[in-house]
Length: 398
Image 1: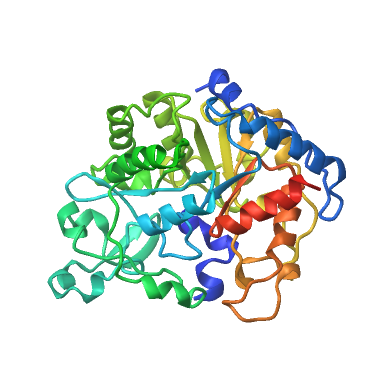
Image 2 (image 1 turned 90 degrees about the horizontal axis):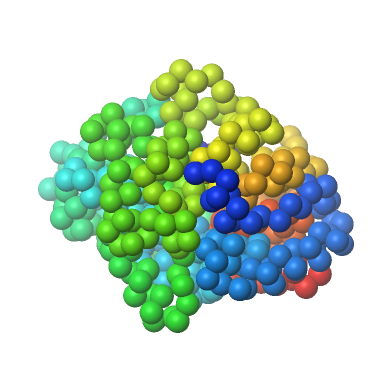
């Protein structure tokens, strides 16, 4: 997930068609479940979870609610490293978000949270790259730092990953410098290796970052991703790779290139996808989450990844209110929902689930998981997959 996450208190708080939709087979659960009243919703979720154990049926074979390791197990290791990815698998994550994909100067796709890498690598400590520091306009925002498109893959491989939010995760800084930046082609090979090693299919959930920005630089990312998926035989509707993006037109483009399940990411209701801004489309996310907007998304994608606040809004004090109709409306359109992002630390939780004010301390995250699961969501991105799996176990057992 990208810069669109500012509405979920991340950085600022602390520092094609009917056939593929049928593949996902999302059971329709109403959004009327309340925060405290689980009842029938829990029983329905348990039935869906049992159905999902079948395997061999593409996304439909995954457990529900699906637990997705957000950039790996990034609550415990620097994000988008093989250390974080493998730990997520060790913890039992159903899917690993292995790859926020950004290109290099020589056209390779690499896994970084953003193209600006000053906050996630040790690039600033490399004197030879001091002159690469730039100020650029990234989706309308002025950003200063070092950008992947100014480096070759070989140059990026001389860098090492660092913790992005050390104020919340000082324990993760222990691992600064241990892992290099993964190329996505390495991730695809790693996926096969881990599938053989673990005796079960490993799933990944890459995201195309800022595709309009990169296309204007002559570094179109959709075609590069499609070529890699085809090269490794992972471009089919049952392939264990779900592709996501905050830009709907990018997902439309992918729907014409590959058969993979696809998901449109959705930020705050008042925001506009950057491709809409560039193309003069006046619609906001609020327009996309209407029944009409969801039906349109379902014509080329199979799921949505809304911010959690679109599922249950927060009031002015940051407390959860009542669920919206988004889950019900999306299911009626044939879409699955994988909202983002659950984190254990206080600043990222709704105010009524926080404990104390320590930014590194955990709040009542199990209570928060229960509230979101009760809405009928099909899965969730989480930085702490082990917590998500325990929360799911509690929820499906009522």
